Image (cartoon, rainbow, N blue to C red):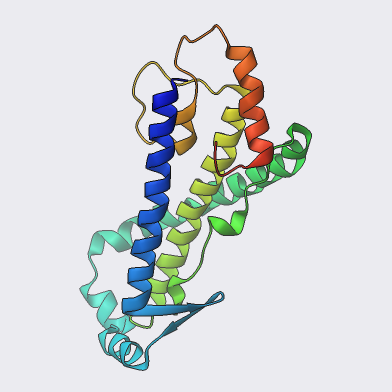
Length: 198
């Protein structure tokens, strides 16, 4: 990979991490405090949240009818999601040690914290829990498959692909054949040493 491109990608990654940290710190200062794994709101914020909470009856009456109609379809997705969860976790547990790939920590991707928001009623919390699981699971599965792709075929696509994982930006150029096998070993070693810096 071109040295200048590699350095630029590294700078972008560093700046993205810095921006995430600054934004998180700003949010935390304004709304809540993290104490270890516990989230604490100021008493006045908690009281304000409780006042904004809609009762379940009011929520049912004011919610859009199409949300109730499509609900069974949305929640039926839990079946393939649980199936995916089981298989990607099983795959990682059995294959990653063989390939010497650092395992993806599930709890870094599937985070349940919205049920602590007191302005949400029971149904809203239930919806949030489902979304936390589904989106977290898909991100977890995506990272497992991204590490797998880095191990077996770290090659960029010829065409632009929407939603590519961050590792893909560092892959070899499409058609760059000369040092493919030599570079492949470097990509594999990077997965062993530091899985967060592909």
